[in-house]
Length: 256
Image (tube, rainbow, N blue to C red; front, side, top):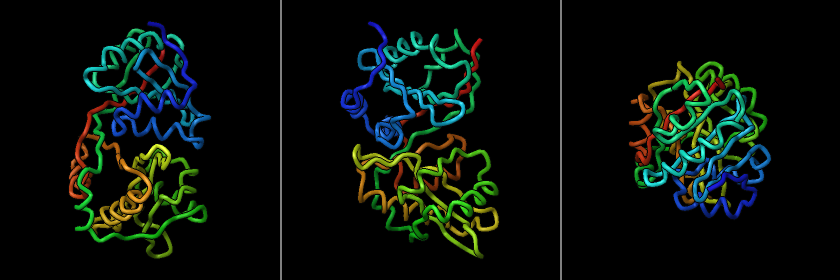
């Protein structure tokens, strides 16, 4: 079965919508907001996304266990036409399909989590205000201090789905989104951090709780990615009603 470039969003939405939690990022990237930065490939029901809106480009390929063989075949056929340097988010084991064409460097195991018990949000008092474009300087300053190296697309602030706590003229805690799509009913929480001088006050949980309450009015599936070895963050998200739904790995790929 041949690999094909897929340009039909309805086809992609149907395939990815079979597991909207696993594919929340890809579903969000079908929106006009991200679509111009995407290239899609399909082999039967297996789908891979190459996202060009980051440097380097990022390959996303996820499947449940029953679909791994088909997705591995797709990635093996796709490898010769991929950029010489890229980042990849892959279901466990799929990196082997790219090892012949790339030197694969692992960046650690990660978890996909989904908000499955939103009742728990009620136990955490929310905090924060909705941020906008005028808050970008303060937001960048907070990330530089508390979360250097994070992936942040400033356009996402325009969605109205960033919540922050101000203190002393600056931001000390924030929770936002990587994708937010009312059309496809998915959101991915991201760029969550607290300033070092404000940690230990529960502000991280409070801004995530506030954001999740806001997101639930417009989407059905609230998800997030987190490093598997970040125990405090995992426990915080579990306290808020998130559960682990899938493992995946993040990798750097460099052409041989």
